[in-house]
Image (cartoon, rainbow, N blue to C red; front, top):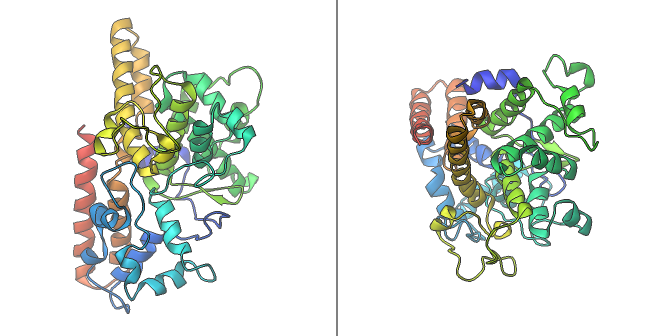
Length: 384
């Protein structure tokens, strides 16, 4: 299996800068800025980095009413917003914006918000038709997927929704790179406008993609997931790529329908009889509009394992080893989809940054500790 570094180079992708957005105008990664404010030695509110880094459990315990549930409601005023340093953070990342913009953007960026139509996501009647249903439209819109790309990826991969979701997000990322960079820089940056044009041509024929095209798209989305950065489309800040992929998969699940007639949702909440706890992730589907992006990502990780197992079984029965090769290629993003490691990876990044700019030995020690925490989480996912 190719390393993530090599795949990132193949795609020609660098960490994408944050952009101003309409719904989420805070341009900074709020949690990273919080770590920088509190973890940099010698600053007004400096504490040991291990204290500044809340970790997944500490962060979610303050921000979600029930961190174990994919349907958890938000804590409206997390304890850290009452600390003396919070107003300074708000001034740093959201100067000139309403005071609650910092917390709302942090909730969005960490995948703690839902996709209820008319509450969390605006969905038009046209979008409901284009995405084959109200619930599917809500998740697809939140994932930042266009109707044409949504349909093309689904038609190319049929029931393999985990693959279709990665491909759809990859094509959208490619288009966003094209829009963010001058055309005369595309070749040097390995931005393949021709591939995007072939994919989005809009004819009745499906685009013909080579193995190299497939590998390029999967490397693009994998690098975006690994970087944890947020791109922009039409002036709107997008979710981190991992949450976009999960939301796209949820949209495909809702759009393709269910064998059971038992409803998953009732009034944009889990229908009676469905679990609201952590065991809901073991079910074939959630009430996706009522779930947080983080909850949907937890479901998606389980779904991708189920789908890979189905493909492996099909390959074994048919003797089609090409299918196994495709499975390996399109599953390369899985190790970086861990819902816990997204937070720890940010902590590792900032700890390393501080260590590189600080002369204090303690900063290097904290960076090593952050690396160990992140490594344990990632290795645990790889071992599954």
